[in-house]
Image (cartoon, rainbow, N blue to C red; front, side):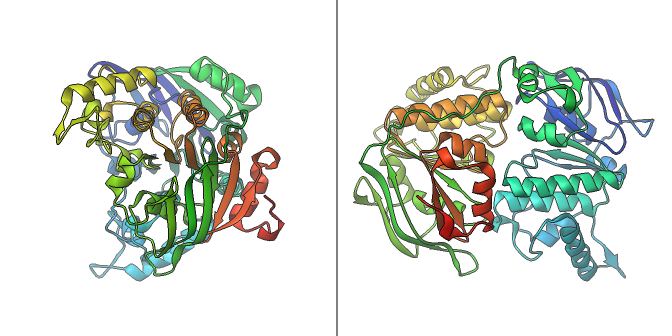
Length: 504
């Protein structure tokens, strides 16, 4: 397929400026660039979600102009979005077949659909339970539903937007084997990613976008990750390097024998003990769905606990509602900024209040302080380099990286004692990633206690003072980041390494 001279304008911004992209049949083609570089817009045009203002598209040598995703799907093109397009109140099976329901004598053939779903899951190593409600799934499981949904429709071209964001190294290797198998069967894959080492490992060709334009098309053997980063952002690839320890003896958060019951009636968090000290970052590693999400929700008061103690600076908070915990100084960076961190259609100054709207500078007594909120938002924008036309801009108009910087700035400005950060750099580019890492380091230097949950193992190893691994709801290992590798950490996460071999 070929996209030539693609231009797309929105009010006040040119998202794509004469972009060229040529993808050969049966290749894995990576598209990289900063958030806001135009990657998602370009893929939405290819997938029929948006129309180009200028330029043309050719698929199989024939010029096309898709007016809907249905037309793209009919042409054999499927897309897995970074922010998933799933119906939370339907099951996995229902989501997969939605809009492409197999029928028999005018009735949906669920038996055939279930058989096809099981075959796809086994073929591509995408383990799913057909009857699970999507609203109960972790982010990684939702991604697997999206991938199977595309394959179920018979796509020959797969557009994958950051498919490795939630995977451990062993799972990444398995995914890459699957992608190479798809390639060997004649499938074409467009692979969008921010992890440049992964791009170099899997891609046959790499196209770099910067500020809405195509700046280079290269082969992996001709460039390094450092050079790719320079093409993307004009600077070196950042690294989450460790700094001198700032941990003191004071325990900010103490978790004792914490148990949380899951939706299936079994413990999702099983007798967890954990202390987080002032000036310390504790990294929590684990394959998605092993209790990390439930642990976070229990700490915030979003999910009830079955038993155990939660102490904040020595005071029990187990019976406190969410609002009281937030007002007491627990900051929260949610794993999905769109679902739990932002009101996308609200202006930035309203988003800056979320979770802190009862306290100054956002409130005066029982009343909202609009002037104080606007001043605080302007400070967040300046201090955390949120790139926006102004504080009245809607959150939806920002790139993913700038949305994340707004969320982190909001939490930092409130002066928390404890920060719970869930996947804080998921879906953002290397420039924004470096800014988030520096924010977390600065918070630690200032004495903040941080619980960092991440699927990026390099990030965990580079930032954490201590690492713990969760498997089936339990902490099965505590590791020293200075002597741990991503492969070893991945081994504990999958149970491949005996938990008895771990040492503190």
